[in-house]
Image (spheres, rainbow over the protein chains, first blue to last red):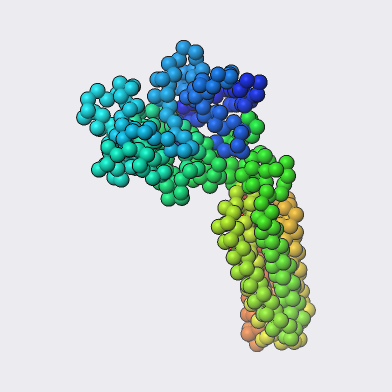
Length: 253
Length: 230
């Protein structure tokens, strides 16, 4: 069993009067993939947005309880959110490259975080990030073309490359394949397998099969509560909770 | 929360699979009984009918195979549905093998003389009745998802082994009295052994039912009776 990278204890999230998460206790292991599943609106995205303080951008959002990364309190008011997001990258449902060149998409992050001082350092970061995201061979001769000129699957890998360019420790993926075709999905899944050797990954997915394929641990959320969490194989073959079973077998009313 | 699938046709497909397996089970049960009766009564007239019913069982097996393939492709079943699907595949294989053994027993009737002494067949009959009861119980445990009942069947295979040993001994005793008995006694020994093997397939089914219900395999080694140990 790997070390715990992120630990949440009695985590509650409120959007105004509406409570979105109820006392969530969930540990994410280092260099492992944790899949979060559950019906829409169950709180899985809200949970991952607590890990990089994305909820800060919503005025009415209030977070109570604990969430830690390597023992550091993520909710600490004095925490530098920019440096937190350098350590916790994020990939969204729809690929969202900047309206800039492929090269600039990757080099932007390292530049603002002061990570590539010289052109050759930046070149190296861009190449490494694109290689790690399995996109290098496809784009190495067209780095100055716009990121948006790539196919959907390539754009998503570009976004992954952009996330890893600042050398994060954790990557959050919010339904990263829902807008992709099966081949592009397969490439992302293959990539996740490779990336987990270096990064701690949390993936929100509506595809049960994808959760089984990519993750080692799975958590099932329902109405803001973490209903069951455990070894992925166990969850999908023989879950302990009836609600989990009803959800993954498609019996949810 | 409802127990039915949101997708009705999925629910129907799973039910259809279960129904097919239950039908295959009851066909296997009657064939085993008929084959047993044919041996005990040396009823040569029923041989063809038993062989024919084996074809029916084989057809069920391929029908169930197709249903399972379709379910896997279309539904990618999970949790209890996955266990249900995989268990059906395994159980249908064991039922088919039991069918083959019954057919083999029916074929053994042909060379048997009509005047076999009762004491020779008594133990074989008892063995047949026990195996029949085991098959009936295990199918019952499948239908009712009854873990305890399946486990009981699993344990009872020990008795099948012991009775096989006793039935074999009576055939060998008979054989040793007169070498003229050699030919048909060999057939009776094979028939006895076939019943014991049918018992093993029933034990497999019991294990599968336990897995189906609880999601865990039975722990510990299988119970072994006299025949296996010696």
